[in-house]
Length: 408
Image 1 (cartoon, one colour):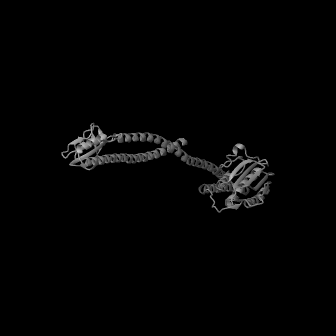
Image 2: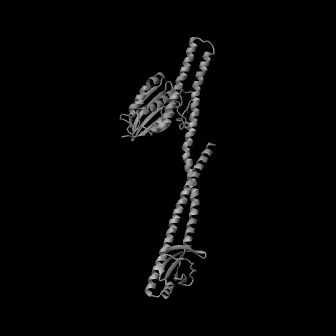
Image 3: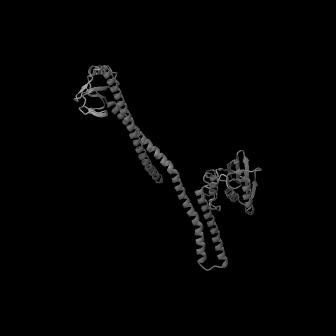
């Protein structure tokens, strides 16, 4: 249903784009036709003027208008489109200078070119003064009309093909353009649904604990137990809200660091691991850090990298469990700086490795957490142009490897 709506929107956009494109095409065709046909008319006028100039010069030098003109008209080379000549006397009577010339229309002649209809044909005429009358040259515009008709046919065919291609191209672009919007809407709907579910759970627990505590008189210890449970759910609710706000800000700003924002991956990762050592020790988890002997500079701000390492280490400690082992290492390998976090927990099934970074996704529903930690890590990795892989650790659990290109 949603895809059908998206396609209808794309079809509407394609229709508008095609209409605008065809309007532009028609305008271009009108301009081209006007320029081309105008140029052909100008060429006809040039030929007529040249012919009249030659005839008039020869006739004047011969001194006899009739014989000279008749002889010239018969011997003159003709193009594929013949030029006809007439001599118009002072009385307005026209005399054709060769057999087969169409009858010249009776009109008042003047200098310059004009277009007249002779019989079923359209002619272009040019007249010049000659003795007490006029010399008139004419050429049929049938060839010009044929060129214009052929051009129109080509434009119609090209327009039809262009119409289809423009619509298909605009529809394809519209579908492609709508895809990110549709994906964003779909993810937003999923995110809203998941967020409402995650927020509803602690709120329901708080409401139930309060209703149960107030249902009948209880001793102080019972009230303290209820308040502790309410407090725990309040803390969980607080963590969820903080993570949601952080993700909302990251979606808007994409955490784009300035070109000068760099940090030492060894230093930041070491500090983050040190911060987790008391928690790991209390939970019986062996936490180890192996740093590179040389600085590993990455183009990212220290706060984002600290949060990324914190998320990965916290996740590893949870799944390693009591008696488990977590190892964090930073290496410089050729032109890349590599952060590796691995644990001895149950690992991540292959079919879940592609979705483990989705918001609210949990590989183990019994494990505490908001389900947003790895989504936050993914947002940081995306914003810092890091490459990540999820695989199996030599410790037996999951291995997260994040790498950045060298920054000088």
